[in-house]
Length: 111
Length: 122
Image (cartoon, rainbow over all chains, first blue to last red; front, top):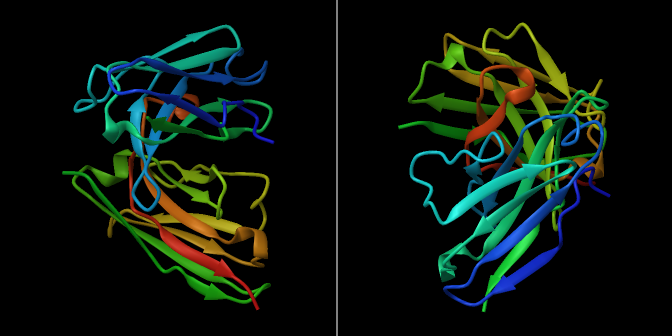
């Protein structure tokens, strides 16, 4: 049971828009700590997609965007491409654990 | 170009020890915190430990506290994870990552290595 809750899977057709939610609690997201998002293809190095709730590192396409409100955050991916098929994880700092927590991960399938 | 490369994984018996190494390059090493994150088979990512740039501050997940020790050698651009009293549930791919962000609660895993496999089994 992860501290941050994500849907196990989402799917969409090429060109469509999908969103992945990340729900936390009073000691992490609701407490005001930043949410970060990572993309991971099994067998490869995870990649930072979004940091500080909504900031994109250089090189990440603007098809990827992040937002945060209250106890939850969201990752939106527009104009879906086959190469977006991967696992996506949210992450935040948790003050009660004095450490970082990940969501359980969401598998994105491009139909 | 930032590069992070882990090594030292392998097969170890329950109760045994293993030391993972992480070589970093492409940035001013001593300026940045470094962390370890793991992924057990079929599971998601789990943060394990982080060390500040000067090595003066370290933090651990409850699941490894008292058994794992993170350290760094800024003269060699290396980070280490000493893992003692290993358990079957420590079996995972262990990733090393360079941190980004201005201070502790805003740190995030900016660049990751490809990981090294640790298997704890008799």
